[in-house]
Length: 521
Image (cartoon, rainbow, N blue to C red; front, top):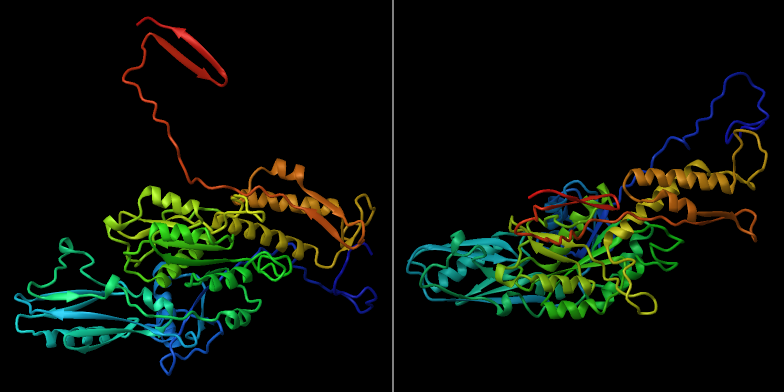
């Protein structure tokens, strides 16, 4: 009986017609690749989700209910949904740091307006307008500011007005509370935002809350996700401990998601506010191919946790469509860029990318857009400069290729026997040989090449090795050498202009030959 059946017994005697269905040649890989946003939830009845357990979120209302309105994690979902409304996304709430401290800041009100107008206050980049009139006093104005802040329950702060001050306090505790900005007149006089004459407001030092302290413990959260696949993780903390534990979880070791034993793959995205010098120094301390940290200017009004979530949302949306296309020029919607005079210059952006920092710049729509999805990877195991994993697209493309290959092998050869090439077995037998396996890998590679994931099938075939293990008769060993497709990232032009071509001589260049044809002027 040459045909190998998996279910119909060989000794069946009952007539007549029996069918065994085999999907091994029909299926195509189906990739969900969900995103995971990690952040602090609020305590109390306003946040219903338990900590350290991932929960699927389909709307901002669900995020607010699960994690508490104004919480770090709820605000991350706001930024994510502004950039990605179709990707499957989960939230992983963590508890506030033990002995964590909330961030605080004070707005000092002085003087009285001589003309009616509007105070254009921005909290964490969110516009909080406060109307004032000529009859308002310092007391009534600080009360109005506090009321306007507290009216918006989705803000990450609450306010208490005690003349002449308005004290802002973050609704969550931890070091990222210091990312909450306080500013006036984002659009300036050109946008019609001017402080009413006679009124003076003094904002918190540096334009941000201060005194927030504490970093969440992610160990239990990482244990809780287990083997659940999360391809794109927004992790908004950039301290060495937090980055280290997530880099290990998604790393290449035996225990990592990119390791041979787990094969889950994935990427971690974060963001960091800082000066050019500070970000350059930070980049020199990191070296991971699975971690991408987006650097942004100190003067941006959006918190780092919203930058990280927006980056993750745009990355998921683009890389699911095509993991090999660069992310450059993708806008980060509803993220407030730094003012024009405070943005990184070209040489600074280039320096940051050379130091393992993902970079962004502001587009013509006044929204930040991704410029280069750099990872923090910069050195090999011996500390020498290396660019193997420097771009997010490299591992994203490799993951897609490996998953396609794994699907082909596990679907078509799930219960096969193994024989040497040249073995004379009957058609239909569930037998694989090194030659059959090699042909399947080449066929799948051609499909991947057609889909724009790899290139150069000829050299791939030349270097591909499939052989039986000399010490284990039941094992096939494969040296798999894909040539991953690259991206157009730099288009360099030498504009060798002339004021006038010599009309007396024509230079004709065809192939590798150069001909000179004389012609009368």
